[in-house]
Amino acid sequence: MFKTILFATSATEASDHAARVAFNIAALNQAALHVFHVLGVPSRGYSQAVTDVKTKERVEVDADYIAWVTEELQTYYEKQLAEGDVQAGIEVAVGFPHREILRQARAVSADLIVLGRSTGEAEDSVYKKSFAGSTLQRVAKAAKCPVLVVSRPAASFWGGLSNIVFGTDFSKASDKAFELAAELARTFACELHIFHALDISSMHMGRSASQDEIEQQRREALRRIRAQYVSRIQGIDTYSLEVWEGIPFVEIVKYAREKHADLIVLAHHSKAADAEGPRIGSNVEQVIVRAGCPVISMNK
Amino acid sequence: MPKILIVDDDPNIRQYLAALFEDHGYLTVVARDVAEALQTAQDERPDLITLDLDLPGEWGPRFYRALSQEPELKSTPIIVISAMPGSRYAIGNAVASFTKPFDREELLKTVGETLDL
Image (cartoon, rainbow over all chains, first blue to last red; front, side, top):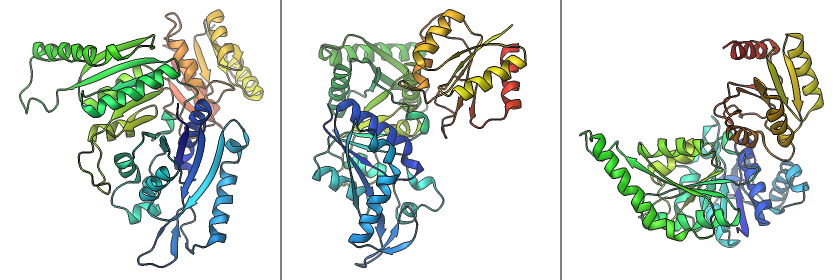
C-alpha cells in the first residue's frame, strides 16, 4: 500500500528502533525505502562549515565528505540492507533536518515518512543546540503524507500488523486518517479499533460532570462513530468501537495497550499554513511520545 | 514443583537457564520460537515463562499477545530476558525485565518471589 517510504535517520542509536520498523514496513509493502540522513547543520552565513551530527566535529562539506558519510551509513545499516527483501537506497544531505526531510519527501514522492525518537535527549545533540523546536513536530505538521513515528524502543516491535487503533475527534482531518486506517486494515487483514476519548478534563471548566452526563455523552459519541465510520468499513471483517472518558492522550495509550495495537492512526490539525511553526496538537504529540506502538499522524 | 517455560532461540541460553532453574528445584520446559512456545504453554501449563524478545520469525511480544488471548494462560507471569537495549517495557505486563548479561541471583530472586505468591 505504501510504495515509497522515506526513513529519516540520525544513524545513531536514537533511530535504531525506527529503523527496524522502517525496514519491516518496507518489506511488508514491498516498497522502495529511501534511507535519508541529514549529516549536519550549517553554521551561520554561507560558510561551508557544518557541524556533523554524528561526530560533533566541524567539517567542510564537499563531495568526498558526503561520499564518506554515505559509506558510513551503508555500514551502519549493513545487516538490514543485506537481508535483500527491501529495495533500499541511502541519501545524504546538509541543512536543517526538517526542511531537508520535507524537501526529500517531495522529491521522491514519498507516501510515508518514518522518524525515530528525537536526538534532543542526548546531552550533546547538535540539533538541540541549533533548534528551538523539534524536527519531528515540524515534519509531522507540514508533511503532505502520513508520518510514522517510533519514539520509544518498546514501540518498535512491529513483526506484522494485526491490530490498528484509529483515534478520532470527529474532525475533517480525522476522516482522512480514518481512510488510511481502514485501507491499512483491509490490506493487511487487521482488526480495526475505532476509538474516541471523551475529554472530561477540560470541557466542564472546573465543574465536575455527573456520571449520567458523561455516560450520555459516551452514548452520543458511540452513535456518532457508528454513523460516521461503520458504513465505510466494507472489507474489514473484525472491528470494535469504543469511547472512554478521561484525558484523551492517556486513554488512547491505554486503549492501544489493551488492544495490543501494532499501530495507532491519528489526525492532527494544522490550521496555520506556517510550516516553520513547531507545534502539532498536544494530544497527538503526547500519544506519539508515550505509545507502546508506532503512531501514524496525518495532516488533513 | 513449579514449572518454568524458557523461550529463547539461543541454545546456550536455554541450556544455561534450564540448568540454573533445575538446580534450584524448578521443573523446566523449553521452546525456540513463538509457535513452539505457544504449543508448549498449552501442553505443559507452566507456572512462569521467561521470554526472549528477538525470536526467529515472530517477535516475543506477539507471543505474549497470543498467550493473553488464552483464558487459561493469560495470567501466567512473564519475565523478559533479552539482549535488546531499551526493551524493558516491550511487554507492559511482564513481572520483570532482564537485559543479557543478567545477574543470576537477581533473576532467581525474582522467580522465587513470583512463584511464592
